[in-house]
Image (cartoon, rainbow, N blue to C red; front, side, top):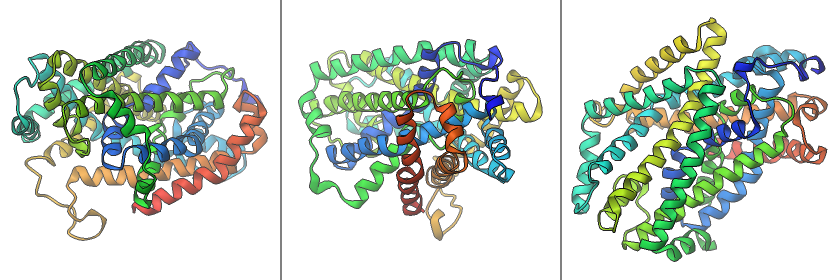
Length: 458
């Protein structure tokens, strides 16, 4: 591998700065899972108990897997599938290991068939907030508004297309003028808006109750189910298992420490999730509402809270704008995974490949939209794991419970066990002791945790 270690990267396929790379990776990790899923899972899983297990998971499982993905991409400097094939060939192991990367790429593609739809809901709520929000609405009206959106396929298609168009506008450009420039703008603005929401929650809501709820663990609430839920979400929160960090790592020069980058990504991702939780629950508790509302937390509970608060319409729009930004940065990474793979294999331009990938994403994404209305009664099976699951539920199940954990497990096992330790050390960067800690975590702790989540969720 020594001849490849310092191989030059084409300028249009490389990050121009360390901060550009880090913000892109943090943007890939930060998405709906941080702003939407983390708060509602904490709300339904015991608050502080869930957060405690989640934090442990980030450092023992998610960060080692993130480092494994980054170093795999940087060592091979190819798309996710070809990176693993190249490293397998270089270490005299079967090219069949290319399936390791293919599983993760499939996870990204599956996510692209429903992630833009849910992101479209957020854009719709941004539009509603800008038009006056939910001022004066009661609980029944707010709930009816969300149900009306789900029952209207034409409206959902409009927002899905708009979100995909924004994605295509960025990804069709080269790395520096597209992904890097977009994240250099989106991530700082997202953080600033999130801080503003937290400050608003502190002034207008009950931030003391929010902090107590999130950071005072009730150890009696730490059940096997809560542990499993927190470990599963902690693993997915950093964006591993879908080849995003492999792809971004392929654009990374050798002078960046993989360990420090993975830790930075994990900490930034966690800080954003905790800030979102504090801001959301301060607003919810301040209005005397119930935090354990599940997925409806930001589409039903929060709009109801904003409707009775001073400046509620403005801060509702601000909140949904920051969620759109978070969703967009993740969707850019998902799309880049597929675009890089397809363009490498077919030799097509970025612009044409991006259009084709997003068109297919849109068409298959229609099954997600129709799952909430005209195909809401359709089920793939009456028995087994797909019993009672709509098409959307089935795709979500396959992606979250099979492809992503399997992809993460295979990547961390490949990087930790198949790639020689001397080779990974040469590419890891930073202090040797950090590589040693990563090596043992990636060989033992992380695989055990991912296997447990994988088997438990089947």
